[in-house]
Length: 378
Image (cartoon, rainbow, N blue to C red):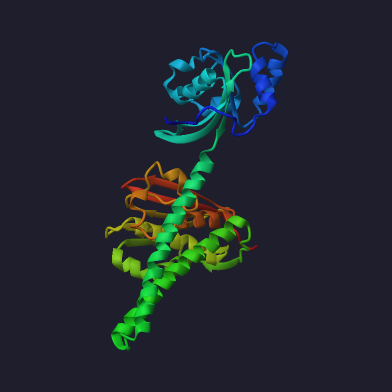
């Protein structure tokens, strides 16, 4: 756990007087205590009141969820709990200075079996007016902090991705303008390089427009009946250069009729392109085994795209579908992309009324499983 402190001083923003009043009277007035407790249990902010020895006098429901079970039980001693070190520092500074203090604490809480998630809380604390303890309010700002970081990462990644092709294209344009190349193989080579990198920039822009339409609710699906196996085969043909480079083993498992589906083929092209391309990019070794399958039932269609590559680290798994998020940031520039692919996949599947789940065992198997309602018409 880490904590960021700010110097004691004026409040950065005012707190509701009702919160201070609740903190001041919770222990003294039995009737108001129940009312305040009921009201504060309905807020999303964590509210904690402690006595001068940092024993918990009150913690609302939201606050108890922010810490491990039992940490904020009645009269729990925060001075003896290792998890509350950061919160203690803020409370003691507020009690000692007699003024409001703001800061930030980070807590590691269980997300799933064997997996912890770091949560970030903004804390505002101040002494109770009667000087017999302190109150604090905790706001969960994890999503906001992560979104800002992801946006900064995106700007860095997108700038890198766009700067390289733009620089190359500009360089070749200057070479052609200089008249040093008159024609022949050299001219052809210049044009091929310029075309390759212009397509790269177009792909980035198309991804941005696609995710914007899907997230903004502007995507009008154009339903049509098509064979999914043929859709996947077209995707594989489009990815031929990368497939020839990586030499993967690709298996298709679809019904004998190719798997008939009613949906927007454009977006399913996007789904399979991104999932297969992602597997190829993240696994540079040759001999990777990729399997794409489809199973039809009366009520739904289940698609699975799996590979036996390096997998997705458990710390990254909860966030892979967030836009601009990229796994393995230490090698972010080794794999091309802006982190939009899996976000596009998720939004496209959801636009068809479906769901997508990730199952990954590093170095064993990574599977994206999609459940889509079966449709015969729309």
